[in-house]
Image (cartoon, rainbow, N blue to C red; front, side, top):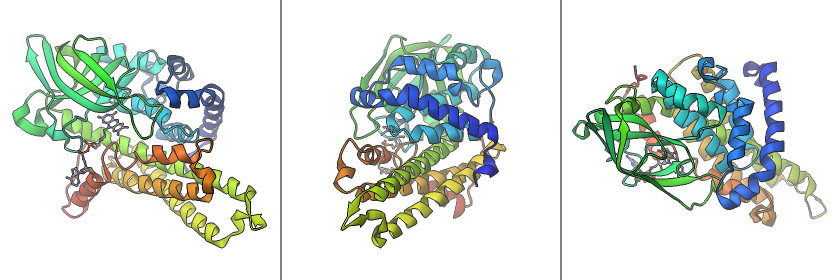
Amino acid sequence: MNNMYFTEEHELFRQSFKEFLQKEVVPHIDKWEETGTVERFIWKKFGDMGIFGLVYPEAYGGMGLDTFYTVILLEELQKINSGGFAANIWAHTYLAMTHVNAEGSHEIKEKYLTPSITGDKIGCLCITEPFGGSDVAGMRTTAVKEGDSYVINGSKTFITNGVYSDYLVVAAKTNPELGNKGISIFIMDRDTPGISSTKLDKLGWRASDTAEIAFDNVKIPASNLMGEEGKGFPYIMQHFALERLIMGVNAHARAEYALEYAKQYMSERKAFGQTIDKFQALRHKFAELYTDMTMCKTFNYTVADRLNKGEYVVKEATMSKLKSTAMADEVIYHCLQFLGGYGYMEEYPMARMLRDSRLGPIGGGTSEILREIIAKMIIDEKTYKPAK
Ligand SMILES: Cc1cc2nc3c(=O)[nH]c(=O)nc-3n(C[C@H](O)[C@H](O)[C@H](O)COP(=O)(O)OP(=O)(O)OC[C@H]3O[C@@H](n4cnc5c(N)ncnc54)[C@H](O)[C@@H]3O)c2cc1C
């Protein structure tokens, strides 16, 4: 199957990225999981490797490569078992930077996209609010135009890279009475007066920096509006397709990692005089889980391929996230069981994986919301078009 999508160049990239992760990242992971802070030097190393620029235009320092380089990046990040570290990297590269690239002016791209690619600036994407995340159109943060400026007031929560990033991509209402047609997207520097953030404590993704952010009369130049005023909602929805596919790919990759680890463990651990991979109860469960993982992975690759060809795969990306994240939770639950008591110990990978995986069906659109979108598209035959 891999040869259908991955060329020799892709595989060379996978190999060198794997080695880079083992050498530069893995030795620090436990410390970052402990402190909840990923040190700055690693961002620069990712920048030097060109990782942040895989899909972005060469004009801004990127490499303009196809979607399967991104798939490799995501898969290998999951296989070093820190959902939090992976989240920091992909939230910067594919949440914040996607908006900067798609909606930012040339000046904004020079100021933010280029240093994002080199690893000199880190970004975050601020959509969710304390009053509700699923109902994006119900957001309360406002941006009021005053001469050549906008003044932002409100708050956001659960923002990945929300404390340590250098800039923020923020959704706010420029026209609250218009509902989802009144949302616009802005970019602002972290040190703009009136922005404050509080780090949140959480079940998993512990190496990731997750924050609540307050905006108190934050004055930014009107030129920091990205794209057109009032178009924020379609921009957000359009990019959700990529985010959901990313979360689907992450899910199949961490499930695959868990299964490979469990397979090795089961071939070494003995009970009742034989290795536990000889017990039919475990073999059949393993076979079923491996099948589920492979089906999700195969589906996700076809969606990535269609995205790569320029198709608007909103329905399929939604299906990818819905099924793959549920599958990963189930696979990891059972892989932990295969390890018995060791599965529950922190020095083995399953405990952290179980915690990290649980975010899959919540972040970037809960499973309930995803089912609603799929139902609308299939039962009501609703169609979604990309923002112009
Ligand atoms: C670690 C972490 C990192 C995150 N990173 C980011 C980030 O970088 N940027 C960002 O903007 N957001 C981020 N999020 C926010 C995430 O996208 C939201 O948590 C998610 O969209 C759900 O919103 P909510 O938490 O407000 O839940 P709510 O919207 O309050 O939902 C609560 C429950 O009600 C259900 N529900 C709501 N509406 C319906 C409905 N119509 N039908 C059926 N059930 C419904 C939901 O499925 C859920 O089970 C992150 C969240 C976490 C936990």
